[in-house]
Length: 537
Image (cartoon, rainbow, N blue to C red; front, side):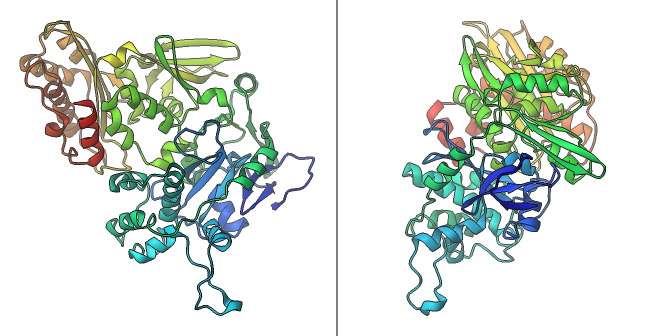
């Protein structure tokens, strides 16, 4: 049930939508934002396509109070980010603002003059520049995916208008990598992304939204709703101490961060989650900062924020960052969740293992650390004890000074699951070509993400030559016995993994090292060219 804001002894879900605060109660904690929009709020512009966060037809924009006016995504007091409504649970909106394609019409109604040729009583207001550009550039055919594209473009539009800039065509392509179109093709949509800045500007008036969110005073949420004869709870603590105490109290409750994996458990596997503990409102868990000799990444930090910090220090990781899922997934999903999930094809763990990252676990007031490889015991099994949770990740700054590479192999360039992903780091003895240290970590090659111990041993203390690489490639067959599945055969995975070691050597050998332009088929991508020019890679 959804009503306007009112006094209620049972704590409702409260968020900003369509110009006002709404209170929602009585819906199950796992009800998706998409289902609420279409079935309860009757805002049917947002579409359901895949219902698993892949196609982007359900893209909406979430607004939160900006804690840093200069942070990426900050627009006049708000942090605006795209997410997939199909996999976001409704209680995660508490204290936030929800923007959908219907809101764009409202912006034009308040800022644009009606078309002069329309009769006064039937005044027709112009479309928002994003929508008008799509019309002008013929960016829509069947139209099913269009609202999702429009919302992704709207977020881009607001971000660049706030900064006084315009995106390049490649930046638009990156921003739209989570939106799939099966009939129009992407060229006219990218044309629209450039065209929208040529039209008279229509900006989001953030002042009333900021005022409303400030008045909400989100002090955490304890929401409950019935499921048959039982009551399911959704707990959203605000502090790390509250989270730790709650986890000890409810060790069997489902932890929820970005919902980019757990959301599929509900939509596709129809799992019954029971009580949920949401970590997304714990500001301390979102910390990304340098501490002494390490980069600390809170387990609640988004994939976008975490990879952004890594790429700032290790530019060679830019490609795997941009190819990790899509912007809506990276905005919602967390690096801590990607690690804790334990998927053998996760893209974060190989990169982190190559950088000697440690994982930080907490139970109550007790905090412990371990090397990330030690965290994984077997397929989807890890070291977490009852009542314990992942608090953060620590990456030594010294490890980032090695030559680092990350390679993602998948059928599609954008928004695809890896057949395998590799994270490599190598350090040579000063003034020689002898390998001092090497890390070769792979996802998609075993039941867990793991380092290639035999291949590493074949290289350490040896000259970094073609002969040593050949030995390491043979040793790799002792490290892994990969499986065949829909993404790749076992033989393909092993051969590609061996070839990636060869590629590492080609890019980092002491004489005549090849540039990324010479080793990557994606080197013509503008973001790669810019990175090469800036970093001399």
